[in-house]
Image: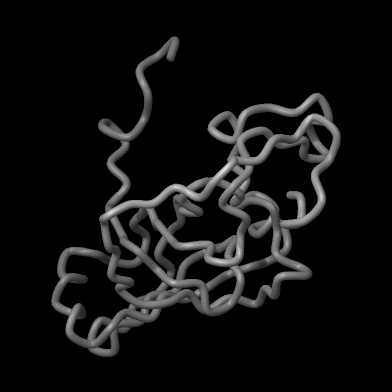
Amino acid sequence: MSGRGTLRPGEQRLPAPLVGDVSVSFIGHIESPWSHEDCPKNLGAARARGGAGALHLRPELVPALDGLAPGMAVVLLYWMSDAPRDLLRQAPSHKPEGAGTFALRSPARPNPIGLGVVTITYMDSARGWIQVDAIDAVNGTPLIDIKPFIRGVDNPARGS
């Protein structure tokens, strides 16, 4: 990911920031072992490094956990607030020829929303605390949503 000031060869920035009229309320935050300097690039790397995490929900949202349980896979959406929001094309080290932002999983995007499919390993529903098997977000990252992963619905059709 390029810093805000320097572009790699082949990268392109958005000429002006996008402005919208939608607001998002964070439901809690993510606790992780990661800082900006050592955060894994994806959940596979986080799992390989033993990067379990925890989700801390706002107290008024605790009843929304009803139906979740250890062993379930869930989809997390989180806000990567420090990521650049103006890159249209990127040249990450694993893809030096570059690609458009929407063809990459980089946090640098117009809306820096992270997505991860994780497994719940422990829950304290009374406290609004969920432990997950891995997370690729820095400690303190705002949590947007938790959704159940439904294998028959969330897997793309063959050939897609």
